[in-house]
Length: 98
Image 1 (cartoon, rainbow, N blue to C red):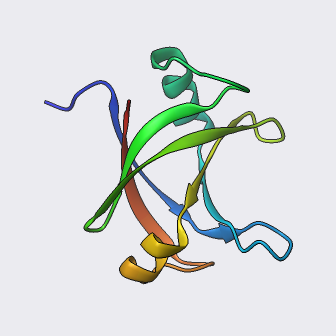
Image 2 (tube, rainbow, N blue to C red; image 1 turned 180 degrees about the horizontal axis):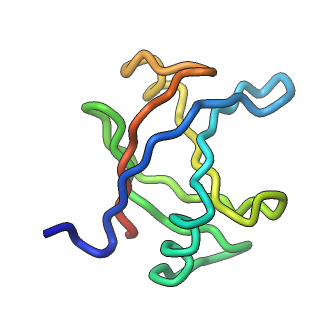
């Protein structure tokens, strides 16, 4: 039985426009709604999570995105390098609400 605070999804990796090089995945609206109902947001609506991608796990936050009414998740450069995940890749991730 899956913990109700654990979620898995697949998404395409995209790069934020500009020189910063931040890479993200979008969390679809249905999953975002589940997260909204079960989480305790802080600040501007951020949700603290423990994310797993491949063999890597890290603590970060889901960012609310007003344009899509859903969340986006950043993937750190060190994780992308270790897991060989780049812009345009389709990848599977899981996260737990912290």
